[in-house]
Length: 288
Image (cartoon, rainbow, N blue to C red; front, side, top):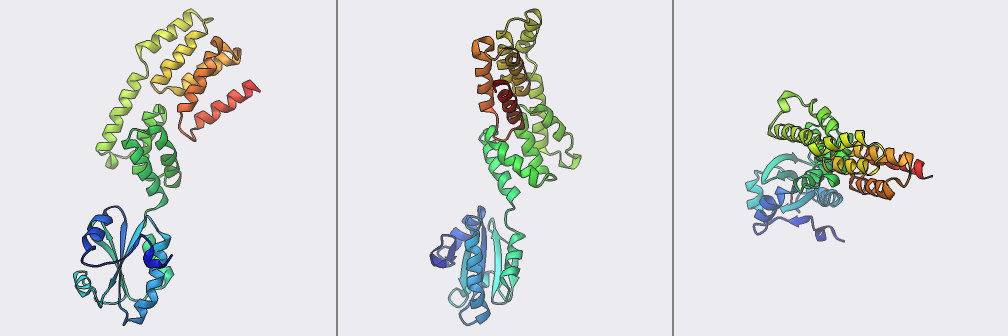
């Protein structure tokens, strides 16, 4: 594929100026390269810039400006030297680089503005959180916090996922580490969610079942019912502990219902959840 056939490389003209610099720059960085056939340094740099753009498909749009045929665009940017590179984000120039550059210099300059891996993971998680797909959001936000544990925005997204996947203790612990300067509206909403989750976690139904188990310790269906009730309020670790406790005494406890409910709960846990891994190992040891 020739460079100018790549979907992220364009010749900037008055006709596509608004589409690229105002609209497409809302979601991707636009790298504007000002060059001219009569300036050898810019001609030499052109394939370098095209190569770098090709390496960052989905992250960068390259808009080439031939300053000999598109003088008006060059004037709008106030270009005083050729070659010149400019970065546009959300319709606004954010940085520039003038004069002859090596590929390494341009690459280093670009990397200061390109989304980092943790930013992309956070963005994935935020989309899923907005769709209330908290289980699916667990994997990308967990990866993001491993890369950048100091990032408060990542911490808050992780707390959101924790609260909505029943990890109340983890959410409370991480929330307590947020400094006052970072306690914005999102923090306040997380605090409210956490309090609601804690209140819902000890419902009258759960309290009644716990009392019934004390009064009827030989009834195997009661711990199963309690596990279901605990799962409904995201207290999955306790739910699984009750079921594994039953199965430790008898594998087919409650006519096999304990194992069925345990497997159902495991299916709802996020990919990579340490609780699921721990429970599966325990179950394997019971079965084999």
